[in-house]
Amino acid sequence: MIKVSVMYPYTEGARFDHAYYRDKHMPLLKARMGDACRSYTIDKGLAGGAPGTPPTYVGMCHVFCDSAEAFQTAFGPHAKEILGDIKNYTDIAPVMQISEVVVG
Image (cartoon, rainbow, N blue to C red; front, side, top):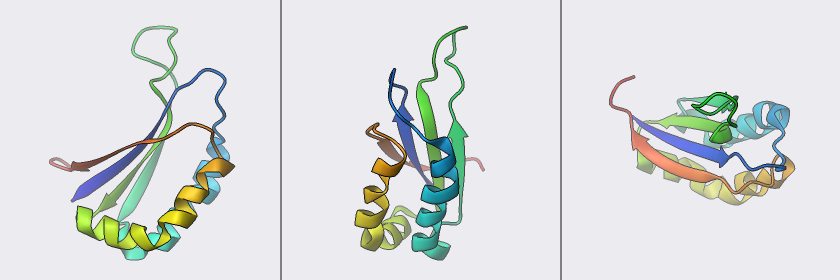
């Protein structure tokens, strides 16, 4: 199993619409990827590790798939539409990582 993490670094004054991300963007991704997207989670950053500091990431998602190939096969044909939707909820450039899930 792999996890595709998409993280949005906290930036003072940046825009991130958590409701849109939760209610529109991630359901769009799931609909386009179908069964290749086993599940996903969404995180909303609250604070940094030190008291009174902002979160490292204002928001992030984790998409679980059987393999990197399964993700790429399902995401690829819809990449333009899914990536094009980013402007509807944020002006932050996302950071992406694919990881192997070693404990689930």
